[in-house]
Image (cartoon, rainbow, N blue to C red; front, side, top):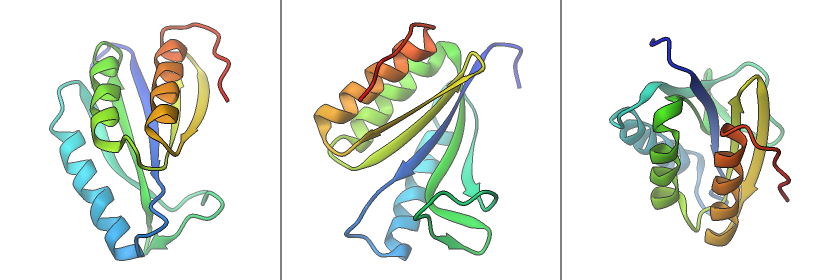
Length: 131
């Protein structure tokens, strides 16, 4: 871990047409790609702790939810990657930076773009009105 500031993200994929096995596969594939990105300090599948409403699990792993910690300087590149990979898919992002949290949801390309822009403003320290 570097001394550089980081941004913590929780990414929840909402694939209503996918069964648990398919959603798990999609999540693991996305995680593999995330781990290969520059600036990703840590990334992993979310484990059972406090289970969000509607979440499903396999053993101690929450299906469709992953966590990542990204360097502040790589955040914009990271959300660009998310835009490319997730545009058009329902997703929730929880972003933690500067001691604060922002939770955004998107179910279309336009909503995801707005959510990513809100997250970028939030990380930059601006007041964000989202929704």
